Structures are given as structure tokens and as C-alpha cells.
Amino acid sequence: MQNMNPVIVVIILMLAAFVLNLPFGYLRAPTKKFSVKWFAYIHLPIPFIIALRLLAGMSYRIIPLLIVAAIAGQLVGGKFNLRSGKMQDQDAC
Image 1 (tube, rainbow, N blue to C red):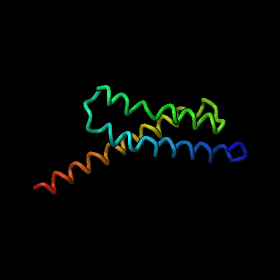
Image 2: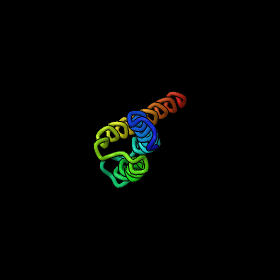
Image 3: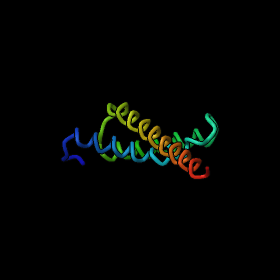
Image 4: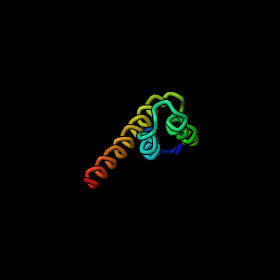
């Protein structure tokens, strides 16, 4: 990715951080807050995001952008879980 425009690389990395965190947010939503599972679901994707950033040859300066994308992925994934749970509850009635 060295020959690509750095802005495009940052956008790709942010999308990757967002998509990588979707399933973890989905799994995190129903767990008890501050439990071991909750902590693990939040922190497991971080090494993969770091590896992607290093493979792309990007500096530490984009870390805040990747954190924002990862948090957004966690929140959206959690919303998917909560919505599917509500729909299942409505189907049971």
C-alpha cells in the first residue's frame, strides 16, 4: 500500500477497523458490563488493527482515527444485537 494515496489508505484502515469490530460489538452487547467477556470483546480486535496499520506503513498519528472507527463498529454491532433481540421478543408474542 506504499504507492497509494495516504488518505485512501487511512480510509481503508478505518473501514477495516469498523468492520472488524462489528461482530465483537454484537457479541459484547448482551454481556455483563466490565465482565471478562465484555473486556475481551472490546480488546481482542486491537492487535489486528495494529497489525493492519503497521502493514500499511502508517504512522502512529492515525491511531485516534482508528479508535473512533473501532468504537463506532462496537456500537453499531451492539445495536444489531439489541435490535435482533427485540425482534425475537416481538415474534414470541
